[in-house]
Length: 219
Image (cartoon, rainbow, N blue to C red):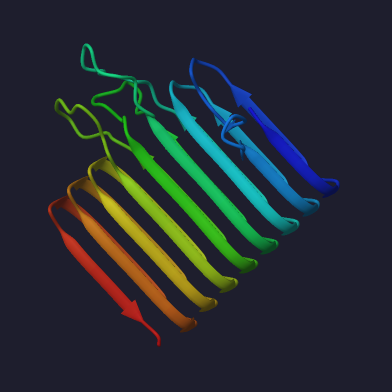
């Protein structure tokens, strides 16, 4: 784990159990946690296998949390070990909060491998929550859920939940006071939410397979 901090009263905690988890790459010059400013807090907990996590914060009073607990199962014989889960948080500004949870169901009914999530926030007072898992019954080689939240401006709020296989979600909010709730359960669902200007609200719920939804508000 690699941690880089500059400024005052910044706090970082990285907890790793399992094997081959990574928070940063010193050889590539990538910090698992990179914080500049004052009173920022970053927490990474990795309790599975082959997880990758990074947090980059600039400003004051930002909070970032990544929790990863997914095992590399099933891994086809002879195949190279993949990055099982990947999560990144990038925050610039003040008082932003971002959380990414990537986890296995208990007991595991299917593979949760190959999930990716990214949260990018620029501005003040923005909040983002991403949850990813796979509780679908059946035999799947991987989950492959992908989530991206990009928020710019002030006081935007995004909640994104993915449960299943190969679901893709993108949330973009630029402005102030926008709110997005996006829930995907099933397989192969695609959702895009774009909210510009101020005070927009969106709620997307996908349950099943192969659904597609696009929401565009503002200008």
